[in-house]
Length: 295
Image (tube, rainbow, N blue to C red; front, side):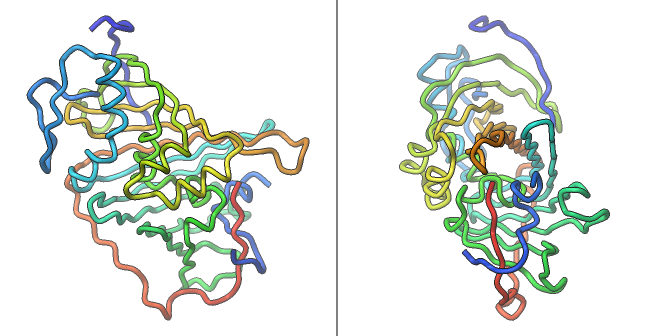
């Protein structure tokens, strides 16, 4: 496979009122399968051994479908944001059930981003159309959860919550307009062979084609400065997404300020992991008013 030179590389890892959502980035900064393979969970994902432009594009665009058939996995996430000379990194880890569209993440904020040293990690429960946050601070009692409708956020919660929903990250690839095969590598967590692709996705196009995160992507299409999102994605021999890096750009606020650049990284491993996501009872949901601030 000499198309772009065969090389090996490793993956790496409105409700308004008092306070501001601690996980908001604004607050923080103010391979394709081998021939004959089929994906776990069903579905023929056979591809030619030799990469082709049409095959590469189709493989990247259907990454979300492959994940749904694969069932579940463990996940690691990071968001690195930069504006001017300031950089902030937020990291998370957890599990996600792609078939049920439910997941749990433990998100760790830098001390300065949380506004205090030693801030407890935030627990996020991700379900269709909603995200539940525990230990989010900003005046919310410690035994209460905050419930947010993702479509009400300016970015559809692609980055506001401090981590990109793994399924939404894959669905965004449905909007891929062009892709280039870069080369082969090995997955960081288990050494599985992966293929590296680089391209650009259009959020609006992804929203039109989305099967699972349409509302979030429609909101994001309205909230970003540009609907074009550059990405790097790594797929294993079953076509499963192992890592994706999206590079988002937000409009400057206030006008004249430096634009906010956010690199979101999602790494998936441990496919078949057990996922148990239980939503909090209604009495545990915070009833006070909050301000949700997206980047």
